[in-house]
Amino acid sequence: MLIVGIILFAVGIMLSIVLHEYGHMKVAQMSGMKVRRFFVGFGPTVWSTHRGGIEYGLKAVPLGGFCDIAGMTAYDELSAEDEPRAMWRQAWWKRVAVLLAGPAMNIVLAIALFYSVALGWGLVNQDVQPIPTDRVAAVVGDTCATGTAGEPECGPGEGPAGAAGIEPGDRITSVDGVTVTSWAGLSDVVSERPGETVPVVVDRGGEEVSTTTTLGSSTVDGQSRGALGVRLSDAGIPQEILDDPAYQRVHTYDVWSAVPATLVFTGDMVEATIEGLIAFPSKIPAVAASIFGADRADDSPVSVVGASYIGGQAAEQGAWWLFLLFLAGLNLFLGAFNLVPLTPFDGGHIAVVFYEKIRDALRRLRGLAPGGPADYEKLAPLTMTVFVLLIGVSAIVITADFVNPILLTG
Image (cartoon, rainbow, N blue to C red; front, side, top):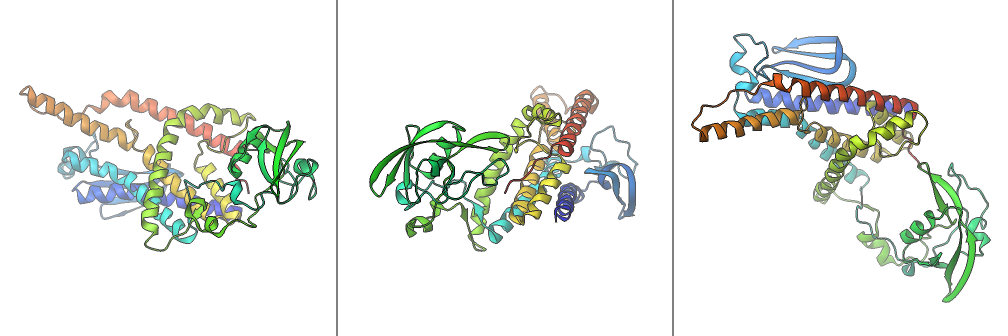
């Protein structure tokens, strides 16, 4: 199933790229521009055909795609027939619309995928409230910590909690002098103290019982975390807590209620995507270090190779909701990345259009004629620098995805 999942996710990425370029192409055609080529991939041409005056095809390296619109700059060589349909000759708003159409398609696809998850499985509650320990009848089930691989290191009733005499039904009220008021709070306190000997206070049927135990240690995402060896029990949780949306980790929806929920969820994901895009450059050194044996962070950048492998793992685990969420998130990132205001990205070309508008407005104030199309030759060094950096970063991330891929847990 892993291989099938990898293939399916790779196909999903390719469809996302095709839709991105399709957005550019359709809006360009609707705006009267000439589309010359529509290709998926880069490098040598594997296959192509001509239809309606457009060459469609596949390239050997399936890591992207492009839509060739005649006259994106004034330096493009054009036939006399195509000259009036050159992109740079069109109204500024048409050019911006064409450039925005690609990222917009990625965003629309992401929303559609989020909506599908909302209907099929529900959406994660971003503001889930921790269940207070005083509303839970028992916070202790088995008392066995887990090891590095997630396998029990002890039998039922053993482990740090069992060694300390903690019993099922006890309500833990403090650890190492820190008051515990929720299950999440207990987890935070314990995880920060791997291997430490700490005092623990529990409420046992209204009686305060003090004990001491040495916390276990488990490795999660390459970091050591403390383990007390207890789990939350659903037994005795009041029904109003179980029914209250504030305490539910996943919210389910019908066809209509899923619409506003999807839009809110998309807004949260867009915010997270922007934060991730800003942090992207700072994460590359750690990715490079992971090639030589350092731990690979779960939130580190991935290439098409790494993304497909993560998608394959989700499929293997039967977590199709995660498969779709990850593909949707990838589309949001693709859309946002293409809006970076640097050439050769779509955002860079949009920045050039607005530069021309602002420049011409200032020229009119001085009584001068419009300045004509921007000189892209002056941007060539910047464009080449960005392109070389992209190649270098891609090489690092792809290598890391082969040597030290991100692994899903669970």
